[in-house]
Image 1 (cartoon, helix red, strand yellow):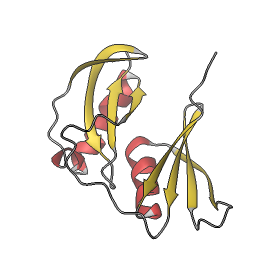
Image 2: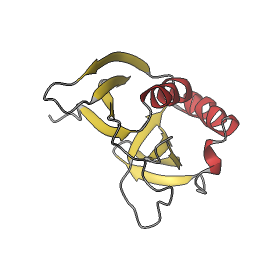
Image 3: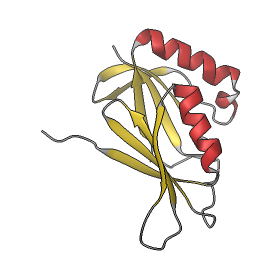
Image 4: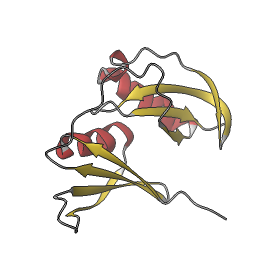
Length: 133
């Protein structure tokens, strides 16, 4: 059986991105280090269930444009109903929903069809936040 081990995303401010993923979603920072190979990339590993999100920082990286029109790339984070409601409240209080106008509606994924909403992280990576049914 295949398993999604990790997702790596480029960020323009590593501390800001770590704070976003740990404070908004309650994920744990499990590692932070420089990667080898001379690319001058600092990585932070954020634990998401059995998988990881690697936040990859290099001073040369630039943020994506805020418009996601016509851009299908995203990843989905799924939460149990009670946790989903608490996270949605945190995101609203932090003004995250103001960056991208998206309605809460049922969408389909690996865990079935259930309510979800798209948001943007600090570097405008599109994230689908979904409730597990």
